[in-house]
Structures are given as C-alpha cells and as structure tokens.
Length: 398
Length: 179
Image 1 (cartoon, rainbow over the protein chains, first blue to last red):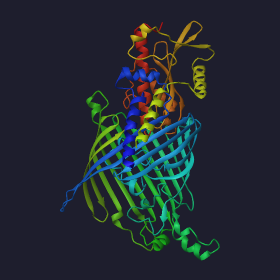
Image 2 (cartoon, chains in turn cyan, orange):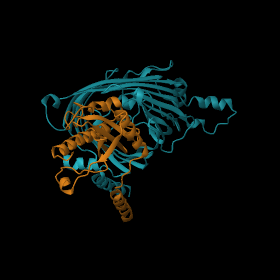
Image 3 (cartoon, rainbow over the protein chains, first blue to last red):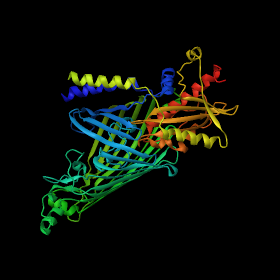
Image 4 (tube, chains in turn brown, purple):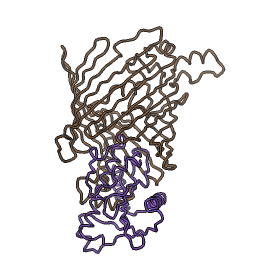
C-alpha cells in the first residue's frame, strides 16, 4: 500500500513539476523566458527530489570481496506555501529502498526578512554536508566519513528556534533548542567505533530528559566564499532517568552515569573561484562523563573526537571552453577522523579508530541536477588496517 | 486507491487554474524604496508597456504587462523595470531588475525572499555582480557570477531569470517596441 501511494505521489510530483515549473530558464529561452516573465502563478506547492544510487567495490588485497549495489537514498521534498510568511517543509526519505524515514518536517514562519521562526523536525546545523547533502552538491560517491562518524549525518531532531540573516553583516544564523541523543535505553547506544551515531532519535517516538542547544553562523560577505561556525551543546538523554524517585540521591547518582555531556564545535569553509572549488571542515567533540558512562553501559566511547577534511576540485571543462551546462570536476580529498582522540583514564585508545581517507575521483555533471561519479578511496587506520575502495554513483536533484 | 489518485488529480487542476498574481505589500514597498534610492528627488511614473497583438506575436517570449514598466520622469525616460518570480529550494521569491535607458542593468534587488534556505542571494554584494551587464552577456554562473555555496538553486534561478530578462528587453528594443 505504502509503495503504491509513493508511486502515485511520485507520478503526481512529475506532473506538477511539469505544469508549474517556470523557473529554470537557461536552456529553452523562448518558452522559459515567457514563463519567467509571466512568473505569476502563485504556486503553493514546490516538489523536489534527490537520489543517490551507488556501487561500492572493495579490492586490492588478498581476499575476494563482493560489491554492493544500492539505492542508497531516494528523497522527495515538498514545500507548501500557506501564505507569504508561512511555509511547511518536509523531506521524506527511502533509505536502502526499504527504510522509510523523515529527514525534515518543519513550519517556517517568516517574521521579517531577518528572522524566521521554525519548529518541527530540524536538521542540526553542523559542518557542511548535514544540511547540504544532495548528491550533486558534494564530490565523491559517499559523503565524507567525518560526516558519518563525527557528525552523524543525516542528523536531525525535533525542536524549535530562529533562523535568518543579518544582511548588513552578511551573516546567516540558526539557533535551535532541540532534543538530544538517546544515549541509553535498554543499553548504551554510544560506542568507540562510531561515536554518537547510534544515538540519533530522528524524531521517531523520541523521548527527552533535557534539551540541547544547536546553532550555526555562516558568513557570506565575500563572493565565492562561505565560512561557518557551528556549535552543539547539551546532555544526551537517558531512559534510566525515567521513573526515579526525585528525592532519592542514590537513584539519581546511579542514573547520572547513563548520560554524557556533549560539546561539539565545527568550523567549515567553501570557496569557489571559476573552475576551482575547495572546501574543508574541522569538527571537534568533547564528551564529559564518559568513564562513568562506559562502566554503566559497558561501552568504549572516547572522551573526545576529531574529524577534519580538506578538498579541492577543478572543472576540466573550463579551460576546454566547452559550451553548455556540463561540468567535469576532478577532485581530491584528504580526511582524518578519530573517535578516540582522547579516552577516559581507565581505558586505552584504540588505534583502529584513528582513520585517514584519501579520496580522488571525478564528478561528471551531465546537466544541471544530474551527476555521474567515480572515485577511488584509500582508507588507512593507525592499527595498520588498509582498505581500497572503488565507487561508482548516480546522483540527481531537482 | 482510486480515491487517492482522484484527490491528487484534483489537486493538480486547482494548481493549474490558480494564475492570479498579486505582489505582496512588503514587496511593493521595497520597489518604491529602491526607485527612491536610484532616482532621488524625481517623480517616477511607472508606465506599463502595451503592445498590439501583432507586435506581441513577433516576440520570442510572452510579455506580461503587469511585469514590465517604463520609468518616466515627466517626459524624460529614465529606464525600465522588470518584476519577476523564481524558485528557491522550497518556495518562490520575487525580484526586480532596473535597466538604464541603454538597457544595461542598473540594479537587481530581491523583493521578497520567503524561506530561509538560499537567502544569501538577497545580498547586495552578490547582486552587484549583475550591474552594468546587458543583453544576457557575461552572466554565466560559476564563471562570471560566483555561486554561493548552499544557495545553488536560488543562484541558478535568479541568474537564469536576469539573463533572460536582459535578453528580452534587448529584443523589445531591436524590434522597435520600446518607443
């Protein structure tokens, strides 16, 4: 049933798009410019989609590996415009074909050009890819791994807050109070290998014991450059805190070991100049109370984590002076992510969690919104592990 | 199941029939403010360009009278103004382009940006990149006009839009319809 409805929605989406899009105007000048000037349908519903279809193949060592072919993500997004100030935004995602999730669902109320109030299921603004994750916007078949192991993208929680821009200072801001991670329910969800990732609640019957703060500032005052500063601060949630007697110091003390304090700071930049694009990010997370947490939850979570990458790409078609909208970006990215940057004094650092990836490849944008990708990844860790991957991918966004 | 389909189709019909256009008062205020800033101490009369049916048929695009104006200060032509709408990520936005009498761009302004995503394109510094350009030339996104990371859709939409407006006004001129 769900599948059938989805297909209907998809088909409807294509039709709606065909009927109301008067927007993208470069190619068919006559029809589109007409539409552009008419430009007067008060189209209340915007429909879009992005998809990422991957083939990942490990190779180059002494044992054989099967490849993986996956419709990694297929997302439909809808923006419904109630009036000039009020929009409802939602992204519905099918991950690996069989998992249905909601990536975003919030009401945005535009108070004035500088201030929007929004409430609902929000993306946590941290780094680059968590907010801008459409496959045509990043190089490489897979998202950078620090956006998986340090920033658990796609990271979203229910909350409310303000977003907007200070035009004179060229700053975009976002400040939200949101729900935190589920750090402990029937057992511990945080662990050394992927940090906080298993604790995401994603708005699915999530529970709260204390809210967290999430914010980001982006500076866009120099053309081609964007610099972001993100912060996430608060405690993880714990089901062990539910039902304890408020006056019982012993119960409270025991339950106090079931959550951690999280401070995550991120710095990112993106810079485009003609054929050259470069971006990078630096994410540091300090985790408090991990010694108690690890004992209580029988886990191996680190006391701090660090991830950073720097990437550069060059559009090979630019010097060839090819006409049209095609782009062929050759890129290289160096990335390090370490979920055991430091650990509590009673445990040892696991060197396998200090990982370095070098990714290089091509993104061939055959038209705006469609990209074919290929890349090679060399993945090393400090315990001597090495993995070679070759990835192929198709990405779309409209 | 059939019911779902019918509901969806009804929805489409309704969308298609809804072609009325009204510029919100916030956007109108911004137009007035911009005109005042660019033509201080002038009384600017906005006069919609009206073409005969025969003239309209000669155009490669459809001219909407509500969107294109000549700007007069008494009997002196001061320029032209186009009002347009384009798509941002989850919504649409309204913008205006002022052209000098020689049809080069005087300024482009976003009148009303309704969502938060991509709002960076309302930046004066960014829109300045279009100033003094004409006939849709030197408006290649990525080469002549820098893309703002995280605002790709809006950058693309407004760049394509301004490029077309700029070409269209040139066409009106070359066919002798501007006088």
